[in-house]
Amino acid sequence: MLDRFLRVWLGSWPSPGGLVVVGSPLREKPRWDGGEQRALGVTDAAGNGVLSVPPAARDAVARLVAETAPDELEAVLGAALAALVGRPEQHFFTGVFRWSEAPSDLPDAGEWEPSDGLPDRPGLPDWLRPFPGEVLVAREPGTGEYLAGVGLKPHDATGIEISVGTEERARGQGLARRLVARAARRIVGAGAVPIYLHDPANTASAHVAVASGFPDLGWKVHALAGNA
Image (cartoon, rainbow, N blue to C red; front, side, top):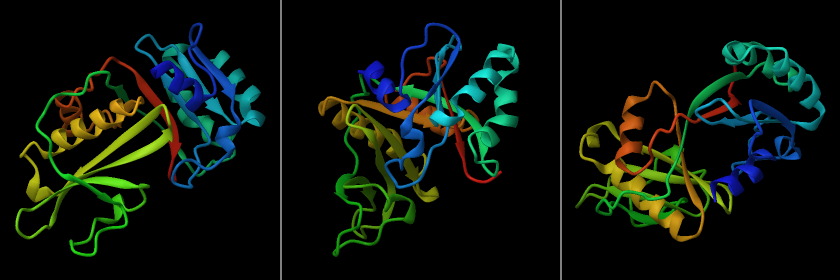
């Protein structure tokens, strides 16, 4: 299932060796939230993988990759990739790429509710509202105040990314891992693969991932985002 998702998400998978650059029309189309993703890649623990860019930028990026030593590639892409795909104001980043085939059997937390909110409950935080359909929300018993939540990024029917956030006052209670595990079980039950991405420096997110059944196998995600 993971291979199938990556073929759709990136435009090609797997790599026969090293980092393969492909031109994909998806890099010119809106992603799930209406934003854009002009460059997107995944590599395994050995550094083999696929970097997907707009078709018109493919040859220039492929030449750059071919001319760069593997141990210098991340720095070179960080300096040049954004401009090559026509977004010099953006920045290149590398994150941890995780997926789960067996989410943890933790106790359920939260309830699924529409991302546009329910009239009889306090509002959701702004970061949860863009997610389509339902979000998984843990609330304070009695008051119903928001404590933690999960949103699902539907990149494709075969692969869905999980995002989680917890209010500071609710941290340390295990809510995030229970929400993530519950969401992951729903994704697996629907026949898709759950994906979890995070900054390598975010140790709290890493702990949540491991506890909810997303091991770190040395895989990485590479992308452009935001302003430089």
